[in-house]
Length: 417
Image 1: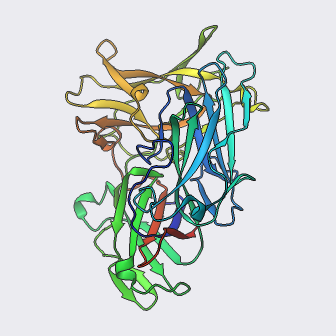
Image 2: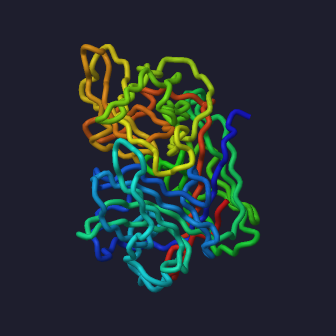
Image 3: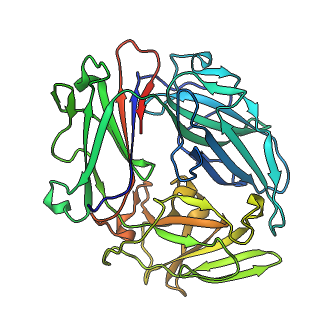
């Protein structure tokens, strides 16, 4: 089978609500880092730093947040948990006491300074749930981190799930022959044998994410057919994705030697300067299979593996070969390390002397998957024109099934696998 990566499946029961404000001003519920001094934000479940942050109702699956402050001095940070609906609007029809036990607005007390690094930083860690805070209902949540001035610095999404319904999902070729070699079609089937749903065809909505990206997720798809306990969807590719390409990779776990990804490493008193090998545009290239980490990143250090605070920050130069500038478009380096957002630091500039788009990003020692993204004047992101698109590409998919049950006051996530 061509598509071998794990498919993650979650189910959500919810009711439509409108946006509300909770203390600090949360202008968006998207994953975002608002302070340029905050780096290397990781939020994951259990002991797997590549996992999506999904816990269960009992909290037996812990969630871990890890980030650095590179400002050069200690700052106090606090966290708040907010419940959201399927559309990631802040829930209005429930109170904080309805979804949270314990306290909100708690200071993060687990932190430490970097050790024996050229660039000094403070590392902060948070585990959820904990003795101060735990959730009492399932659903969509955001974790908000803010500073002593009550300015929001980080927003990260997470899910709390129950377990109630059976879902199966398989990948195959699209029905549209014009997209046969460039796209992937996900076939989803639900079974409600162990969960009572009054009207599945109107109550249920399905979202699907590719590689944990919300920016190009397929949203609000209704089921089409009901046969006994089996619930199915339109046969003509309702969950159709561009396959794109395997992710490019930058591996600088060690600063003692270069590798196939790295052209040079220059360690100075002022910092570590890494130049990656120049990358070609892959739109018209052939497909090649290699192992990646699904667009994510890992903080790893082979030079001082016993000390998590000894990972060095590096100035990493990216270079995309292009014999001419692309008028009307901007070029970005993008991936899980940037929350799939278009930060200013990740924009590349055209250098006619190198005939390349180049840029330098401040990154912590580790392994990074990335794409180059072409962005038009309206902010639309295009990966395939720079990376190509192939049906053979291995991708991770997350399936979310939502139920808008009449009379419900909050949005439940009733399954996860």
